[in-house]
Structure formats: C-alpha cells, structure tokens
Length: 217
Image (cartoon, rainbow, N blue to C red):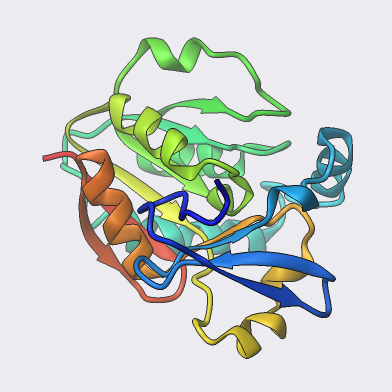
C-alpha cells in the first residue's frame, strides 16, 4: 500500500509536484519521500537517462568529486587493514572503483544493474561498500540496504552518497534533484538513521548534505 512508508511503515501524506506533474508520498516519521509507482518509467527510458551521463577517469573534476567522497566518507571510518571493496551501482564507467584501486590499494568488485549485471559479487563479503548516486533510483530501498548489510564484514563500512531533500515541500518542488525522472526516492539524515535501525547497522556519520556512513558493528 502506497499510503504506508516504504522505510518505516508510517502513514504517508500525498503531495503533487506541479513542475514534474507527479505525486509523491511524504513520511512524517522518517522524512522519506517516494515517487508514486504510477510514475515509474520503463527500464529502457531509465537506461537512456544514464547513457547521457559523461563520466570518465580522464576528467579531473569527476575524479576530484569522488576523491572528496573518499576522504570524507571512507578513509576516516575504514580500518587500516581494509582492502576489499564493492562499488554497488558503478555506472557505465567505474571511476570510483578505479580510484580506490589505483590510489588507495583496494581490490574492488563492481556491480551495476544495467552495465555490470552479474551477481558474482554476492559470493564475497567486503571491508568497504560504496554506493554513489544510486539509492535515489530505488523503488524498494530497504531491500537493497538489507542485501548490502549481508555483504559486509564485521566492522565493515557502507558509504553512501545521495542528496538529502530540503524538507519543505515548496523547496522540494524547486529542487534540481527532482527533475531527473529516474530519481524516485529521497532521504534525510533522519531517514538514514531509521534505515540503519531496520537493517542492523549503525549510522556513524552524515554531512547533512549527501554523505552517509554506516558500520556493521
């Protein structure tokens, strides 16, 4: 039932985004916002959106974008011996995985629903899992977070990047993140704390903008 929050199960309210001509479900308890299922685009349409993204290891701005994430959401929380990693949702060009291997000494497995769809990654457990600009595309976020929790070593780190929504729905309507039709799930630090509780993880840190760090203790 869409009137129940997909994260915490609380009753949601329904709001209409005039610019996107789309209804969303807002949770007053965990602050999760979900696009209604009626507005789901096809996988072919979603893939075409992803193909417009131009991401390359040769682009210094893109490399710097990931390096900031690594330095804030990975290095302070990872153990010195951590060397195995999974980049979940690696995209058409796994730049983050390349940087982790080349510059930080990780051995990195990759998975992407469209571009690297094999499931062999599920046969291992990891010191580190990264997921950047992925969870906003998920219709059932808890399912994915629970899967990732099973792939973490004790003491392992899950570092997630997704822009946190502004809270106020008027601001939400003007927010650039909603303009991507493949973005269907929107979070705040409160949402991430509830996800951690639901999945048996500890939310160690957020930057209140887009980074979240979970640990399996």
